[in-house]
Amino acid sequence: MTDWGMDFAPDEDHLAIIEAVDSTCAAFDDQYWSECDIEHRFPWEFYRVMAEGGWVGIAIPEQYGGGGRGISEAALVLNRVAASGAAMNGSTALHLTMFGLNPVVKFGNERLKNTFLPRAAAGDLHVAFGVTEPDAGTDTGRITTRAVEDGAGGWIITGRKIWTSKALESEVVLLLVRTDHDETNRLNGLSLFLVDLDPKYVDIRPIPKAGRNAVASCEVAYDGLPVAGWRMVGERGRGFQHILHGINPERILLSAMACGIGEVAVRRAVQYANERIVFDRPIGANQAIAHPLAKAHMELGAAYQMMRLAAWRYDNGLNCAEEANTAKYLAAEASYFAADQAVQTLGGLGYATEYHVERYWREARLQRLAPVSQEMTCNFIAQHVLGLPRSY
Image 1 (cartoon, rainbow, N blue to C red):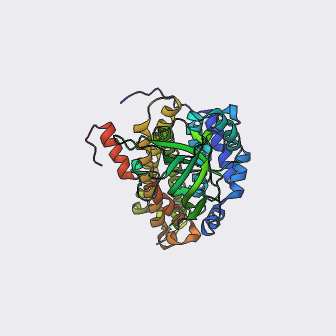
Image 2 (image 1 turned 90 degrees about the vertical axis):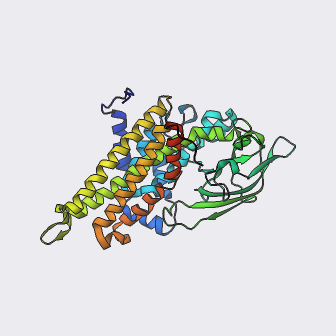
C-alpha cells in the first residue's frame, strides 16, 4: 500500500462546512423535494439560500469573488446536500455552477473570467454543459456539432446535443464542438466555447425521464448560433483536452452525491426498521433486515474514503484519475445497493412516494449511468491502470 501522506485528524474547517450545510438543508424537507420532483420544478428557493450562503461559489478563485476552496470542500457541500434528502435534485442544481466552469478558470482568457466567474460565484449565473450527442454518446470523437468561422473573427454554431442538464434555467452553456478535422485523431479538432443559450438560435426540449425531475435534462438544438471569438475557452482544437480537467473533479463530485444518497436511504431504513413491529419485535432485530443495512453502511463508508482520497490528490496537484474513477464506481454501486435495500426494508411502503425512499432509489440508479457508465469506468481501469488491451 502507498502512503499518500494524508492527515486523518479532524479538519475544523471541514467540520464547520458540514455543520453549516446540514443546518441550511434542514429547512428543506423531503416533502419539498418530492414536490419539486413531481412538479418538475427547479428548486429556486433552495438554490437562492445556498447562493446567499456562498456555497455555490465555494470553489471559484477568490480574485473572482469565490471562496477559493478546492474540490474537497465542494464535495463535502454536495455530499451533505444529497444526504439531507435532496439527493440528486438538490446537488445537481448546484454542481454545474460550482465546478462546471473549471475549464474557464484554467484555460479561459481574462475577458471570459472577468465577465462570467464573478456572476457564477454570486450564484447569479446558471451554467449548463453540452458534450453528449445522439450519435456519439461516450465516443466523443464522433461529435458533429460544428462551429465555422464567420469571417469577422467570430463563429457560427450548428448541431444538436442531448442530456444537457439545467439548460432550461441556464444563461450559458460550456459547449464542445468541432472546428477542425484530424484524420489521425478525431479527438483533435474539437474546441470549447462558453456560449449564450439565445432562444433566437437555440431550441431546448426536456427529455422525459424516470427521476431527478426537478432538474431537467434536455435535448438542445443549435441553429446558426453566432458566437464572438473571445468566447472560445483555451486553444482552438484542444477543447477535449481542456474538458479533461473537469472530468476527474466531476467524478469526485458525483461520488460525493452518491454517498449522500446512500446515507439518507440507510438512515430512513434504519429508522423504519427500529419502529416497525412485526411478530412482537422490531423488524430490525432480524438479521435478514439488519445485515444488508450494515453491509450498505460499510460499503458507503469505503466509497466515501476513496472519494476523499481522490479529492485530496486533485487539490494537491497529483494525478487522481485512478482514484476518481474508482470512487465513482464504488459510490454508484454502494448508493444503489443502499437505496434498493431501503426499499426492501420498507416493503410495499418503500414503493410508495409518501416514504421517499423510492425517490432515492430512482436517483441512485442514475449514478450507475452518469456521467459515465460503470462499464466504461472498468474499461478505464483495465486499460490505463492494469495495462490491458483497449476493448472499445
